[in-house]
Length: 477
Ligand SMILES: Nc1ncnc2c1ncn2[C@@H]1O[C@H](COP(=O)(O)OP(=O)(O)OP(=O)(O)O)[C@@H](O)[C@H]1O
Image (cartoon, rainbow, N blue to C red; front, top):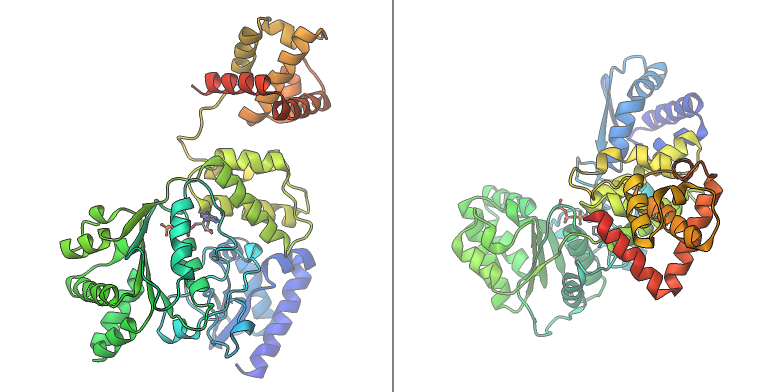
């Protein structure tokens, strides 16, 4: 790019910095790059979709103004998302720690820069040479959180990733299926990063779309034979989003490739959003071949797993924003209420980060409730009312509801009251002051004390733990 353009760009950045202030600038514009200037339009790029839509929604005008102040002829600013893949394969693999994306393309990088982990898996030169789909450096085994939903899929994926050339292939193909946003792409890319970190194996990650595109392009340029040979020369073929494989010729080609690889003892790993038998648009031969290896389902993310993912996202964000803190109750609340998929969990942390950075305020439960409201889907856990809690607890401990609200401090009332407050905190979205008000106008510190007390006791006292569990069950029914 011409030096002059870069000079303009530096000055535009300076203007933006002084209009929006240093904090906002570093949150939103620090990773924006100039791609090109052509006539009256400027082409900029950012590493994520999230950043793109945020800038478009909030700062489009200011970015254009800053350009016009520098170059009056500019009438248009285009913003695109860079892919997460480096476009130059470094010769030295150790130096190939995934870095910020450089290649411009409207890719599906769904991961905000704030969540960039410190993954250091090398980028495989062979992967790039073969035209593999872009890999996201954050999607590694190190950042994959384990839980009941994915233990088997993870173990199988690891086994594949750690295999060596010539090892007997245990299950072929390995077919992983799960609903949207439950970690398929994460696991498949983790296999690719890990598999390519050794010197002797070539692992190629392709989305089904990319496979089709590669094949169609090869047909057009009459290099289809070379394409097939190249594919057959790899050790592990990883195909994501199999449900999108379309077209008779492509399917036939895919089937040949699959057969050739499997017969040659090469590993094939596939992910889709449904089991092979439900891939209706696929040829029967392909379906049965796909079902002939190990088919593993990843089920929906349990609460513990969701909490683990949230924590790992916060830790990743803190690597770049050390002051970003999400209190435990907020994490618990998010894990409890955002139940559908990992992408929503990631989105929630991004929003909290954006909000707390922009407004320079700490993350609170109230803020979280407001910010993620639309991520909480309809069939979320039944909304429990504080009155219900008071009623059920009073019945269980044989006291009256007015006892719970009264100022009486006898032991037979104090404990049930504390349990009720604890349940109000853990099962509802009410804030501590609100709960205090609903328990006879108590102060929020009294509620906090009760919550902590019961939390501590539940960890030690099995009988109390059972009581609390029974109460929760009754309330959730
Ligand atoms: N077990 C996990 N550990 C860490 N992150 C996870 C896990 N499961 C899902 N995620 C995160 O959730 C988000 C969505 O996951 P991913 O893109 O892998 O889903 P997917 O199953 O491929 O979805 P789709 O069907 O839409 O392609 C990603 O940010 C991913 O890192």
